[in-house]
Image (tube, rainbow, N blue to C red):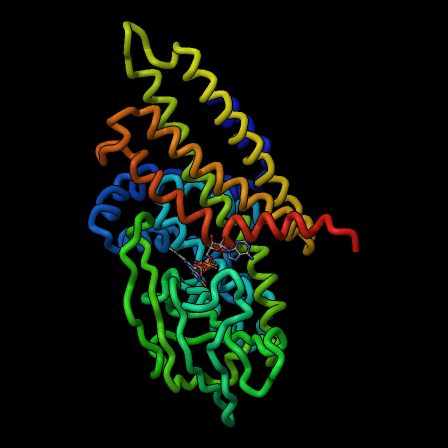
Amino acid sequence: MKVFDRLDASVTFSQEESLLLEAVKKLAREKIGPRAEHYDRTASFPTHNVEDINSLGLNAMFVPEAYGGSPVSYAAYLACVREISAACASTGIIWATTFHAMKPLIDFGSEEQKKRLLPRIAGGGLGALAITEPSAGSDATGMKTRFTPEGDHIVVDGGKTFITNGDVADLVLLFGKWSEADDDRKAISCLVVEKDTPGLAVLRTEDKMGHRASSTAAIAFEKCRVPRANLLAGPGEGLKLLLASLNKSRPSVAAHALGIARAAFQDAVAYVNERRQSGRAIIEFQGIQFLLADLAAELAQCEAWLWHVARLVDGGATDFGTEASILKMRASDLAMRITTDAVQLHGGYGYCKDYRVERLMRDAKITQIWEGTNQIHRQLIGRHFLSK
Ligand SMILES: Cc1cc2nc3c(=O)[nH]c(=O)nc-3n(C[C@H](O)[C@H](O)[C@H](O)COP(=O)(O)OP(=O)(O)OC[C@H]3O[C@@H](n4cnc5c(N)ncnc54)[C@H](O)[C@@H]3O)c2cc1C
């Protein structure tokens, strides 16, 4: 598909990044993709995929060199997310979530915290980002998890829900409220909880429509004593961290959604060329060509915007929240649209599990909901144009 190949070729990577991306494509094509149906059907954690990702040392790209990593540009990271997610959306989000969770530690952690915690991630550890609570979803400031200082420790009480990697993470980046602060927004604080800390329990994992191989856990904290040394920034500085981390993770979930969209588009094109009705390939019908034309145009424009946002980030911009929201909203709406149309183009076969588009459609839905629902992104984008 020349249009998309040429768009991909317009993004410049260093020689090392290009080699890495080729290795990721090979891994996705030869190992991750072929296992995706099994992991989805059995709803089992894709351990072999995570092992293979770690044998390529891919986590190192999240982490600065000083702490055992080997960083790449944001564009190269997004390209890797898209490739892995096209092959297996569950594996893509498991891997990307570690990046989402560790970015605030990299950007706001102290030297001591980074030296102590980041090598674990560079070496293949998993991260989780715990914001959502049963009664605090779109409005995260309503969270109730409490952080009570007690000498050299912070005692955590509360619970988080829908936490990707929540049951398997080595490090959980946790948001809660400082008990001594009254103002809701000024109380939000952030700390790192290490695996097996007494008082941290996994209550259950969810039985989901899609992303069935990625675990989504409800976790609880009961008198969970976390060393004060694991508090990021200061008490009450969590909201700043939260907003900054979402800005970096939203383009990443968009790249993940675009991986799903690309996979569905490719499958749809292959099928309409091969499937024959009324004596001809169904792509020869104008109605089908018009549908493909609309999808191709949307996909090309959305991918171009992905690289625009990547360039902003790699260029050092920090105020790209609106661009990130536009990207997250469009990429996820498009993933849902393309996967739904891909099922339609497969006719009855698309509704059956023999074809990948059935899974892609189920996987696409959550991309419109997580990292801020698309209603919330529409609000954020609209608000940007309010005269101050
Ligand atoms: C599979 C999965 C993985 C997830 N992973 C994580 C994770 O790793 N970490 C984490 O912290 N969270 C995670 N989440 C949680 C996810 O981010 C939330 O589900 C999402 O933010 C929405 O919150 P909610 O489910 O409470 O819905 P609600 O906020 O209750 O929203 C319900 C509906 O109301 C709409 N709505 C709410 N407020 C407004 C408004 N102001 N204007 C217009 N419409 C509004 C919403 O758009 C939605 O349609 C995950 C969720 C799932 C299902």
